[in-house]
Image 1 (cartoon, rainbow, N blue to C red):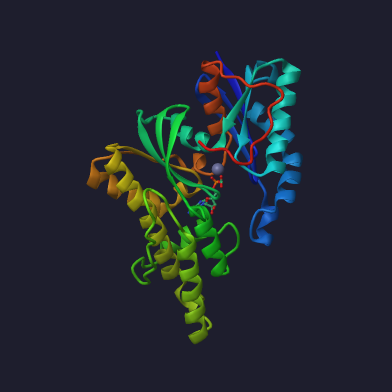
Image 2 (image 1 turned 90 degrees about the vertical axis):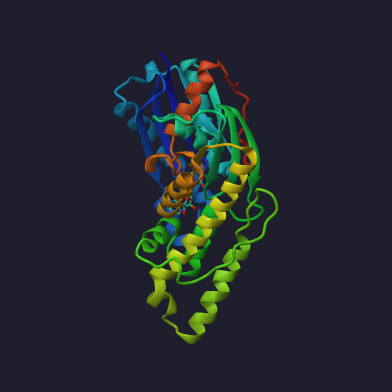
Length: 333
Ligand code: KG4
Ligand code: ZN
């Protein structure tokens, strides 16, 4: 029996989870509404909110799992990549907990954990598989050879896919985070109404800054002619933006899959909650005879279930870390 406490605090979600023998028994997430009015995550406010949330979140996750804190065999935590102040809260808590209970401490790479969320429930992907990891801070194509043996095949050269959603949402005067709102409006709109450019980027890399600029100019040009252009056409604008972001992502993923000859294809990270990405991946999967893996909504955005499951696999390998471990704001898969 192995009972793992997982702790996530890389950005603006404080989360704790209990995993027992590879099964998730609880996954508590405290969101931070405080950032909404600033149009993005304010690092100092994020670390203060983590400080307030960490103990109640862990307490609740232990209660929900119907265990006692003395039952915990190891504590796994997100060591990075992320915001330093936020990471310090989760890391310090995990170290103190492990020290006080005299149990092993397990460091987890947050981007690997997004991918390992696919091992929470069946069907689990077979190795090797290709994962498009799309979040607020990252956009990567990763070849996953084994649980902790991952190769970065391509990545964004500028903005992440989540930023592309959030920054264009800001241009449309939608509140932060705009990704889920664009998704909601897009579902009622015509994706072919407006055409936005697909950048020409070498190899398996991505770029979203040109798209953001072209959307900004498009909105400025049309608002000059009609001040209520955005309000009058919101659902079609959102559908067209989403359609382009999704095609940029999936065209590269398809090129990479063909070139590497891999047919097990997964998506992960916050943007993998996007309805357009999920449905278009299913269509491409059918065209290419892929086995596709799409996470449950609750395991797409930041959560500690993915940290505790990753911790469980490291626990099996006795891959433990020491008390002198420090957070890493940048850390490749
Ligand atoms: O993985 P995540 O929760 O945090 C990071 O590690 O960054 O990803 C957050 C990102 C945000 O940019 C958010 O707007 C985006 O995921 N997101 C979405 C959707 N849900 C979350 N973007 C598009 N459509 C969605 N449904
Ligand atoms: Zn994340």
